[in-house]
Length: 434
Ligand code: MN
Ligand code: MN
Image 1 (cartoon, protein in one colour):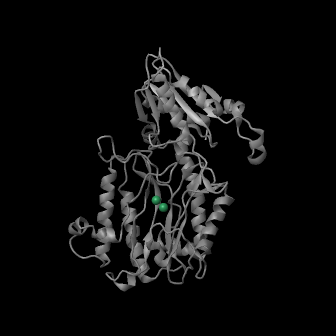
Image 2 (cartoon, helix red, strand yellow):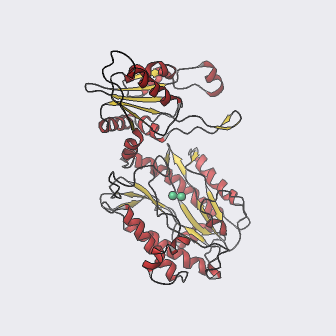
Image 3 (tube, helix red, strand yellow):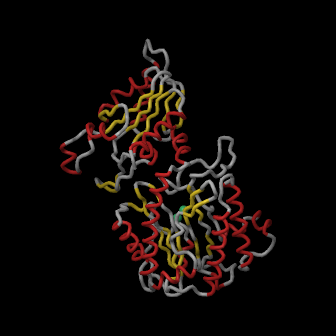
């Protein structure tokens, strides 16, 4: 992605800020065990504003009544670090690359933050981040308040994440292209899993088939931990064990996807282990697919997300009545949350730099947001019938089906960004034959 995109985003954030200083820090390294670390993943908010993937970097946006200034703190070249881990970008190269007013050495941040806050009123930070960087900033603000001759001081600490995440809600063209790249690779991985699947395989072997595609195409990270759930395992919503054997006659639910330039995709497909849907599997699959298609069809600018959620629950409840799993009046069943026993999760979520993008779902008055062009969400209805549920006809027990696509809201309505992934029963059976 071009540096200008990141510059634009910083300028938009500055437009949203009143007078003050925003401090946005990179993610810390996390220890996995003893002295080995988890693979590093940049903070989505920091990445959104910089496109920089190094840790120990800090972005400062400073807005006074007369001047705007952007400073990026990065780690200076360190021969010892370079020997073990490879060279960091360093200050000189960072100056060439980033369209910021100044690049400084992050080792100097603690000394310099006090000067940066001098004569400012608002401090914009992540209120829930207790990192050293923000502790130092607050200590500097306190010291300034106690310093003679300082006319103005910080008297309001505000949440910068809400501003950033409100911007993140509407995806620009270059973000949509990045998401499409993630989805294209994920599509190939799902198709390979369908082609390779056969009875007797282990769930992790299907996962391996997908991981191969991700890595082979240069997508170094999954967007989230893969779910490969054969048969009744699909009824554990966050099943990530993936160690069971895939059995002839069962379905397998795969919820797995990769990340591209830190942008997520999030795709679920459910297909028969032996490549052919049984009659009862067809019966349920048809219902879930019909709900999914109808919910997607309803997406267009102006539609409220709350309405879409309610609509999807009505459709799922109807499906459960038609299958003979629930009986009675739909409204009474929904009132009693009967449908939630078999369709417990929401219809979808925002997606972007985070698979569950933490963008607002309601406006500041608490009203559900209406869709606007540029929003990206998942639509993922599911029906789950546990093997041990004696309240449902026996033939349904052990079936769990979810179908998940990634949908972009457009001016005209919507675009299903993952429409190329086999989804109808005919397409799936055809793919499984390959
Ligand atoms: Mn998913
Ligand atoms: Mn999802």
